[in-house]
Length: 272
Ligand SMILES: NC(=O)c1ccc[n+]([C@@H]2O[C@H](COP(=O)([O-])OP(=O)(O)OC[C@H]3O[C@@H](n4cnc5c(N)ncnc54)[C@H](OP(=O)(O)O)[C@@H]3O)[C@@H](O)[C@H]2O)c1
Image (cartoon, rainbow, N blue to C red; front, side, top):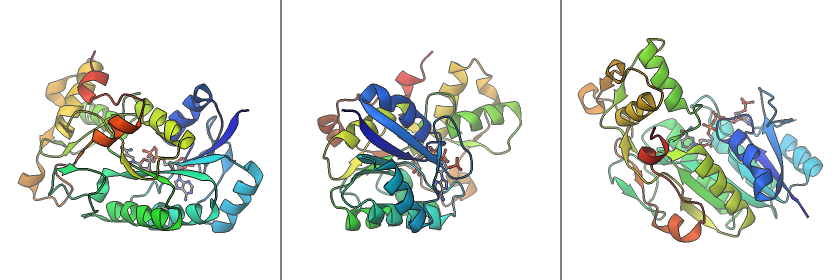
């Protein structure tokens, strides 16, 4: 029998790929939106409202939930932190896969495995860390997936920013000393679907295999799209004295043991 999967944030960059790939993994997917309905997001759900969450869960009766939604405004604590807590409480007894972020780390320790404790340097990272704590406390059986920059299908925020910087539509720069482990959106989506069907409990890093600076990632995007690499403005956090996470690399040893999906590195998935 096909099992029903609720995907919060089905209108978002990640959520819509989870919805799109769910049927092939044996799920009947239902995606949610809050402001922008989409073919992949047909049910309205504002996770800041616990009563609305209860109502949607009673109507949809999902066998599992993949929680990709978070506030579009990076200061939206009520959606990103409180919303995750409300969802975990309402979803008691339902398999829950929660999407977290490498933004919970400062970059001081560089290599972060699943035992690493959050040391966020900005509010979005703090909200994602608070969400993890709430989900773990309410539902110790939930999977909490820490991930990194998400891109690869052309719709990732970093892909859009790179194009905009090259075309002069956006001001700013890509930093050579801001390092992440970017993941292909479809690899991440497949990992989330795999985890929704399993019983992995606790934190799992799911990111790409290659550590890459935001500048070098922009170069890979530009080369794939035959854009002018020389037009990418380069910058450095250190030179500008910016207080942002620096070198954050998610360690993937456990993911390699736990998951069937192969997590490609940016050099592989952005080649050609
Ligand atoms: N993008 C990255 O590089 C990255 C990196 C690490 C971790 N993450 C995490 O990955 C997840 C997905 O990110 P994304 O880039 O796909 O996000 P996104 O494109 O900004 O989409 C956000 C989604 O959340 C929904 N949403 C916003 N406020 C809501 C609320 N109050 N109630 C219910 N839904 C709400 C949005 O609905 P509407 O479309 O209707 O507004 C949208 O579907 C997030 O948890 C994010 O923290 C992302």
